[in-house]
Length: 322
Ligand code: P6P
Image (cartoon, rainbow, N blue to C red):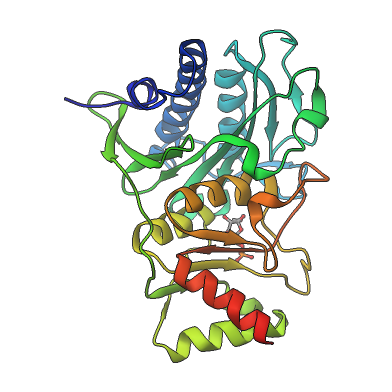
């Protein structure tokens, strides 16, 4: 018989108290509902007036695509109605959205509603990324968000590609669910995802290579010398999903334009790092474990090297020698 995300949570979370299982499963129901709504719009992109820029500029200074706006609103609505949610943080909102539930709200949900959205117009896979933290007792607002990644209780993404796949971890392994359009449910399709110990691909935007720090350039040269192939989609969720399934390494190094890296710690690097480690891989910022970084700002950026144990360890060894 099929296993949906909600059923999986109830089956897998033995170590959660029954009450937590219910509220947690309800929270993930909000996530799966919102991502099904987003998928339905993406699937019709080009057929309705939903593709192209909404004309506004978001807090990141990026032109908001209409689907960005829709995806953000869908997530804020579907998660905001869940009793267990206290605070929502979105890439599209400068400030956290605090739901006035100071007593019942147990969780903080941080998300990138539609990562890679600039690729929508050319039909390249895009994704939604999320991270779930427990709100510490007596802590409210932004202070409740500033937690290191190792405190995440769950994390995941949906990659909207040839099929839509919901991938999540709650600290007991990584599981993938494929959306079955006939029944409108995400159905378990990857019962226990493990990242290959090593791969054959590296994934980086080579256009920035001249401004990468020396150790990154030496590392990439060593991979090329060992016959690795380059794969770069330019959509983080798609590039990570391939790395999770096939192994290898994805990097977004510091560059001249973005010396702290481009990707965001809270709603890109942290959730993917949690998934990578749960699948047997590693994720670092070039010096330390991504999950150990204590955030100082909601939208802070970080360099990211994430992938199979073999390739990330090789980076650490080469950097130690340089
Ligand atoms: P670049 C998409 O805009 C995004 O945020 C990620 O999805 C992707 O990995 C990265 O930026 C691509 O950035 O500088 O290589 O175009």
